[in-house]
Amino acid sequence: MGAPLIQAQDITLVFKSKDREPITALRNFNLQVGKGEFVSIVGPSGCGKSTFLNLLLGLIKADSGDMTLGGAPIAGPGQERAMVFQEFGLLPWRTVRANVELGLELKGIPSSERAQRATELIKLVGLKDFERHYPHELSGGMKQRVGLARALATEPEVLLMDEPFAALDAQTRDLMQTELLQIWERTKKTVLFVTHSIEEAAYLSDRVIIMTARPGRAKESLKIHLPRPRDYEMRLTPQFNEIKSRIWDVLKEELTSRALQ
Image (tube, rainbow, N blue to C red; front, side):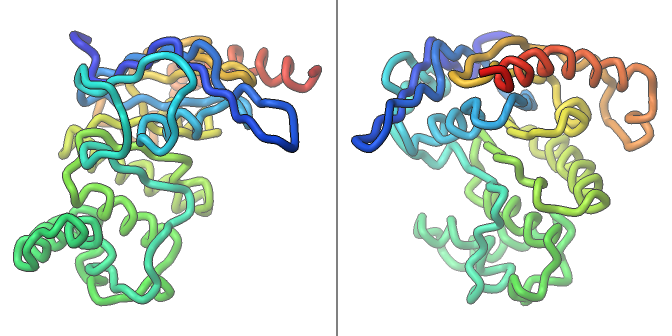
């Protein structure tokens, strides 16, 4: 893999409150991600998956451990990282184009350059005929495409995705997974993708990280040896089902452990 683009070493984070006992979200969490790699993270609910993405985004700070991007410590938010959330987070009073341009506008990019970049990305995510539509006029899948285009607009090096397709119906989710892979093939972004779906993780990823129950740590890193590009039919193969089974076997131990706590 060469020198990792992202490195998290012995990350521990404890949420403290005056009204309750401290909760250790992550303990001795370690992860390395190579440039251009697509890595999914699965684990029991509450194990710290989303918390880790927020640490990477620079929104919160670990109590101990080191986290670096390109060898430099992560000290706060930066334009080299962008997040796509489960909630679409679109501004309802702005059109598709205006939502996609938001990050560029905040950076002070000239309007002509913003327009050109937005046009390219709207076409990339398949919304060319919807530039002037407002969020309430879009389906869930279309809204998530806008969110993805907005995240890509500032040309981040790392794309963080926190269960971005969880709120979509099954057919739209399958379609968005395929379209995400096509976009990833073109852009070669480094992607960290949090999901509760074993099938989604196996289908999208180069590697799947399986986390323990809280306090979360990386229990196993599973390399996904499936050829690319991938299509839906690949999910019907014995090889794909074997990968899903391997992920489930590791995850099941943690789910059982949590149930017994």
